[in-house]
Length: 210
Image 1 (spheres, one colour):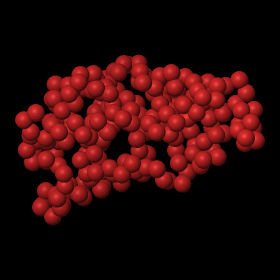
Image 2 (spheres, one colour; image 1 turned 90 degrees about the horizontal axis):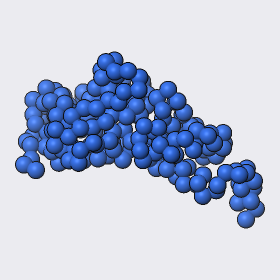
Image 3 (tube, helix red, strand yellow; image 1 turned 45 degrees about the horizontal axis):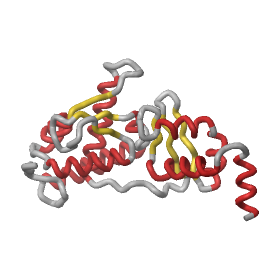
Image 4 (spheres, helix red, strand yellow; image 1 turned 120 degrees about the horizontal axis):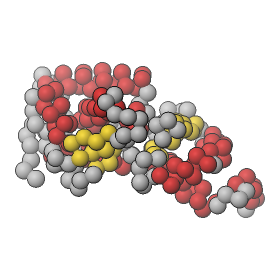
């Protein structure tokens, strides 16, 4: 009880339930974004109470990354734990999304959103591997990225080539420069082995009929 009272004293006028709710959201969803409808209110609340959140997460071994230019908030674990392990296909699509985001941002104003069609991912995959990717696999990969607020679908079926996606600025912080280079090399190495028949993976060789 004493610990809870001390915590409430630190919070002051800030709602304990609201603080707990937004702290959990930040822990579980990787990125809190200003331009994402699901996290917009949390973004402004955490930004307003950022010193409280910084102190709280510091005790847990996290640093809070706040980038107001990109409109996002994220956690960085100083112990290097809690990272998501990506499959080869996840890595390839993530790299495509980052490249597309960078390319499109050069053409757009700072406040314009990056909107693409899923077909662009299919085409890039096909040019890389000369194979068609199954819709069910595309849905699986994009569904995971949506959960972590890297993308959002404007249309319902994320396996449909004509479905529009919004790529969020969080794609720029999904991994740092060192991780990006390692991700690229790992993906390239695994892909080379796969193409030569030395390694199996869940990358599809044919498109499904859904």
